[in-house]
Length: 376
Ligand code: ACO
View 1 (tube, helix red, strand yellow):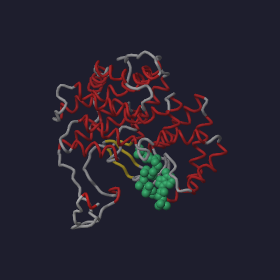
View 2 (cartoon, protein in one colour):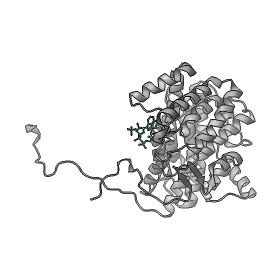
View 3 (cartoon, protein in one colour):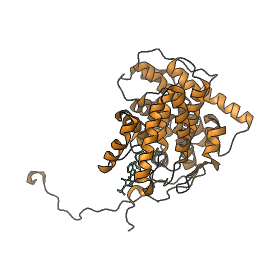
View 4 (cartoon, protein in one colour):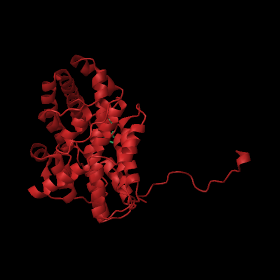
């Protein structure tokens, strides 16, 4: 029997037409389009269309898709009551996971998995996930909910619902770019989770819920919150070097660095670094950016030779902070973007499905005698 591959490193478990990654060269493409092109020219809505249809939309198609998204901003009325019943001290990622699952309760045909049904359900989840997050955040702050504005795009509308006032175009665009950069990323842990669940022909809500649980982990999407915790722990730019070197000496991981696939600079981090620098300047958070930059310099000297560079989560932390998001909304924001990719992968998986069922290398004993309870 073949030996186990720990962490499935290097194992190719699916074919995909959605995103391409060259980890040595630092390349990421969605349906063949370099991520930098999308971050510069596209919108999140257009990127979602690209991933769900494996091509760019025409003007008319994009306009129709945007209208469909906006028509789905409001969650089912009974789900809104559930949000209002959530404990105010609940962690937003647990709220997101619970309420993405709860979307299935208000779907008359939650188990339908033909392609049109999957697209309809994915659209609802994608469109109302930011609303769920904004409603919960206002609920826990004891503020009235701000209903979605269908004249606004996903990013701008989210910040409007969260803060009760329209964001500046710069802030809205910054969040839009973050959503694009987070939309998909090959067979990462949460996407693999979604595909594994979908492969049993279970429903899309189960697959998205499982994926959300996977993303929360600090080794995956939860790292963006870990980065902010670290930035808060380091009192000044000058203290960054000592802090990082002490952690490395203890073999602690520095959050926001390293990647299973990238052994060079994560191209998403390239964009987020530029965004973080500009937003930090605009919002008087230069100190935070400088601290991040100093950590990067220390890490470069210490571990870049091992192929450890900033990943998507590192400069996301400064970016989200400057946009005005509280620390515990960082990972749920990642969910709001990655629902695009998870859904695309679920649709792709079910279009040519085979049940995921790997084998395990059993390393325990054999033929063990059963000892009756009274003799143990
Ligand atoms: N800080 C310090 N050392 C690191 C880091 C890091 N962030 N990441 C990897 N290393 C070191 C390890 O200590 C190990 O060193 P060794 O060979 O001397 O023992 C070596 O690099 C390989 O590390 P692994 O953990 O085995 O690499 P793996 O591919 O399994 O892990 C992972 C990738 C989980 C992302 C890892 O780099 C990590 O824990 N990073 C911090 C958490 C993080 O930022 N996660 C977000 C990833 S992006 C995303 O999921 C959205």
